[in-house]
Image (cartoon, rainbow, N blue to C red; front, side):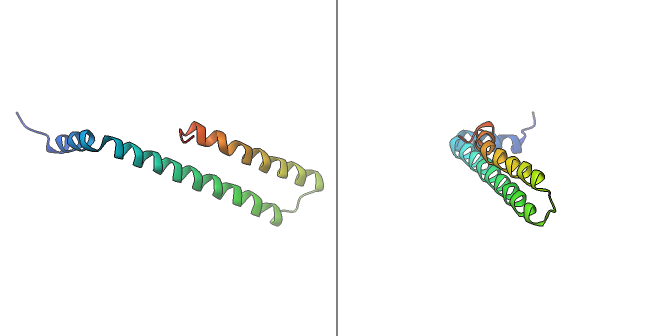
Length: 82
């Protein structure tokens, strides 16, 4: 019988540090989600200044930004962060 040392090492680490690993994973998801939503929000707001939009298009774009900001919470909930 051959022992898979790598698998044994992961099982021991999982048994000893299960909570810490789960917490680190959750923190990574939270940081990634926050970074992505902030970056998207900033890019949307930055682009409106450089775009040549009619007044109606500009209102539509601003409404889309409002919807995006309102949905940030739902993104965090679906990622299991809230």
